[in-house]
Length: 155
Image (cartoon, rainbow, N blue to C red; front, top):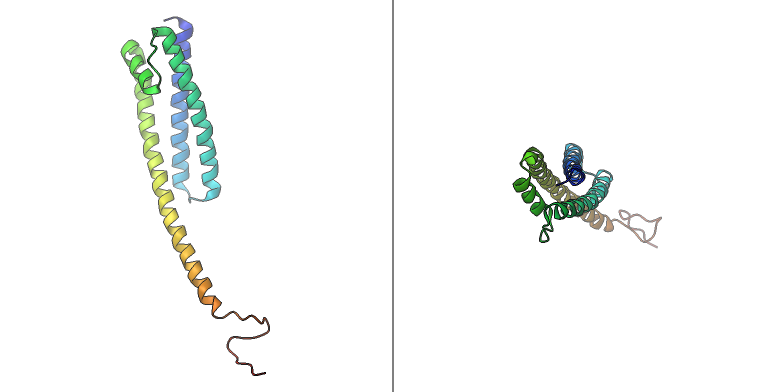
């Protein structure tokens, strides 16, 4: 493998690791605060951008590895990482860090999902209370704005 291909592979792996760590950090920051839509929307937008970049990095990595090892059947990041583990033993530390950061990201995503599910339940309960309150108020509403529901007016 030539130096340019190796440098490209290392650069892709380092960026993948950085994105996983960044997403995990963003999840942890979201978990620490109150789950609001104002905080959730930027998190989702950033995830979308990050995963688009991860897709491009994965494609670049797979292409570099196909060029270096003439592997035509390799199409995914897990396959690429397994090939690197077998063929380039001095990258074991980086590969281990990527696996650990991905595992941490999955855990943080699960925590965010749990918080959102709890928030969803609280919001649904609040909506039910508001609907019940609105239904109870209907009994006191009068079509005549100057009238009162407590005084029977005889005309």
